[in-house]
Length: 376
Image 1 (tube, rainbow, N blue to C red):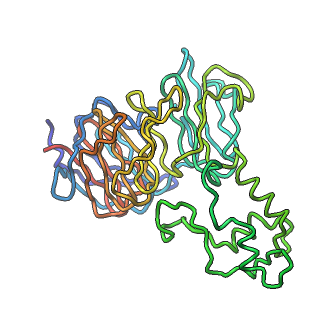
Image 2 (image 1 turned 45 degrees about the horizontal axis):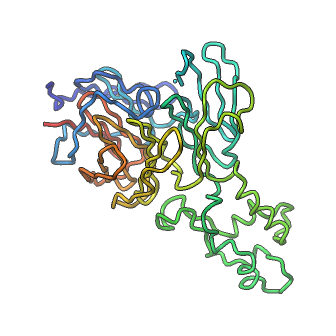
Image 3 (image 1 turned 120 degrees about the horizontal axis):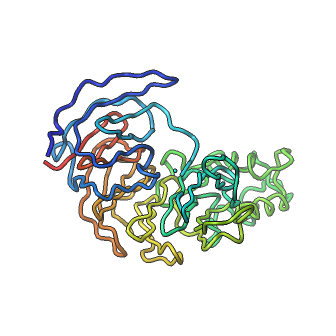
């Protein structure tokens, strides 16, 4: 095994934004050339990164890193990080002897014929946001993410019109003036994590003004409220995850989709296809494993016991899945239909970037540092 402890001085490149290049010695058999590695899959099957690691365990080196949320990539003996992320969500999909470029954006996912650049097919959805990156496996394409909620879930008590009118309609006109709503009243978007989690609360006044008061007169009527609730439950605005069959053309919103679900979807982490299973990790540290062909849940929102918000996407190697929450707790569990946690590693710094794997090295970018771990 080569010595990971040797670290050369980083050199700085400036082409539109700061990019640091960290030379390392690795046993890399595969590069990790982009976000989530080869084909954006998050998988380095032949690699053997450590299971237990931390400041005093299997640490090869640690160095300062610039502010940013881009995930590290590895090419040969270099680790690259930048101060910004690319905003396109692209997946290099190979099926039936063909290659397609998959681009997920707000409103739909598009399939382009690679080489000619022509739009070949599309599936509509995700009108509220498109954050996750599609992944491929079992000759299917998996696309999805959180929207304005799960239509199958129990309604949020905050969105009960009768309750709002009963408590805040001060002049009893059966309408809700936005300034009648207390400034302190907030919507907790993700119930799995505290309201204080960044991006997890929206003042109801702001929500009413931005999403409900369509004529901007400062007052919400019952018809405006009902229309907003209908938009929220529309499948193109709601949480939605789909499995898409290959070989189509044109609008495949109904004809190409093999299965879909709205339950327990992650907002930020992309899904992981690994060893015949489709993995999700959501806020609160909950893991779901789905059968890729049928959509049947083999493991449904089992808790890791770590909690917190999850921003980074899961990755896998050597039969193990690695997930990290924003607080810097990186959990390792065995791939399969039962949740078998083998290690919980605490780095003590915020992590919002997806780690990278090359050979026997695990590269993790925290808020202030870049870490390289390898089995001693």
